[in-house]
Image 1 (cartoon, helix red, strand yellow):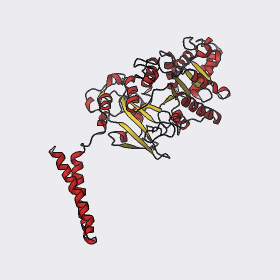
Image 2 (spheres, rainbow, N blue to C red; image 1 turned 135 degrees about the vertical axis):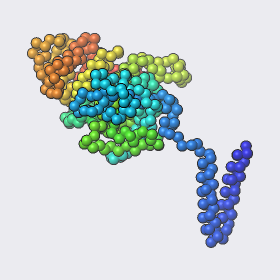
Image 3 (cartoon, helix red, strand yellow; image 1 turned 120 degrees about the vertical axis):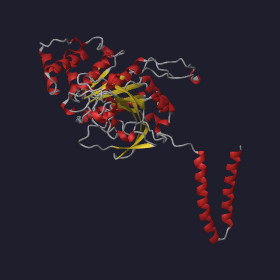
Length: 467
């Protein structure tokens, strides 16, 4: 009470001083104004100093985020056998970067993030970033999370912290991380079809998030239609969609700028030729940066991304809580959100991603962009040989041709690795549990001639929206 009176008295005296200054003669008023302005500024600073809370570290912006999400660090030096990583641990760091593992070196163990990393405190990188140096500026939400973070926790982040509504469909796009050229007609077909389906179904689109390869193509496809995160009122909410990038924390270029950032972190989309990292894409609206303790190691987020997609497809996620207008109760749940995997070009990891998606429970339908190159074209060729009648018979000429295609497409693979890759491709297209007839096919092809068909199939996967 006494403090309130004192503050009121100070404010009142400030007002009186201003009135007296206004009534003074011209010369005196100028001197008085300057003096009172200085005194007024000093009083204001004193008041603000006592009234405002002390400066907070970025992780204190949300106590729930700070107490929930973690980062990781390698805790045992395991020498890499890769010639490119000579003198480094399998995590990608030098031995001097393992201060807690001086006496825990090994050349025999296979490095495993579950065994050889530890929690390294709460996440220190989350908030909002602003892209600069790449045309018009844009903003995105981001967070660094441990590789063992439950998908349900991240979904809670999406809904409660980032304000995203649950989608009717999840379109996951995978493929080449390196730059590749798409035929103009296929590029147009892909971009127009993807955008149309995403907007008409209320979908989320998920990619690898970097400004390279297929992720860049997707970013350009939805440019100008992603969810705004800068707080401005969107022109048309129906034409805005979340484009979520999930990538490995340790490969993000300029990631140090995102650590302990205050306010909006500026992110410059520039990288040197010597860098092993990649910039994240400026057309994405949200980023999940998966930390498994590695540096410069691509693809470490693949398993976590698959777990997220499988969880979304399998879980009965509450959509409404006590919506009286629609006579619903808090027990209303969906039967899981449909997930579709779109394959565009791609390498060996892409084939592994397709196989994991088809073998997941429930299986994730696969859409392959024939004509986009490499992994996509191999899957398309295998699918068209005999469809569900294809069998693992290496002596059959067609199968030998498939194996030769794999070896030609991935020349760095040895004989044994090529054979295993061949078997994985066959699994993707032959097992009747994964590929069935009619409209329930788990693997679908699209190409220039009948490209719209693929997106019709995707639309049919979306359950009717209750009104």
